[in-house]
Image 1 (cartoon, one colour):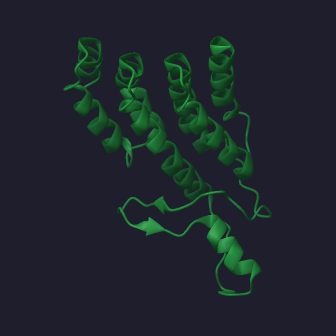
Image 2 (cartoon, one colour):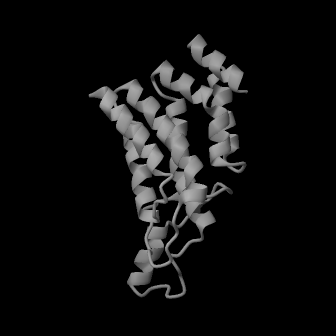
Length: 180
């Protein structure tokens, strides 16, 4: 069953390239997050592959439909480190009639930013995984993760890779050293 869950997780990552809507993209992120907490390291490694695939695909594949007014994001942290209001909160306020000037429609760039902000903690948690094989996989993919998450968020990936230089497992340290 583990091989099937890992394969399903990798397939999940591939779905990010088939032009998902906001709602579908948000669902893909949630399921990827769930796989990243699986009991088996091989599934968590596959979740890393899914996170990488999704982060890389969203900037070009995400379909932003102005009629779709919700995105299941909560407490997203912006580039300045301050909490931003989520799209779902904006939608709720709009439906209740409060803040009629507030709009829940985001540009493609903003949608990708929100999705990346939801994917980044998954990648960071995998860098701190209890399994050395998962941490080593994060270190080996650090460069690809930097490319996928973009210049603004790559500092987090680099910090994670630097932290892995101090790992107790020599395979993780070597992978981190090669990545940096």
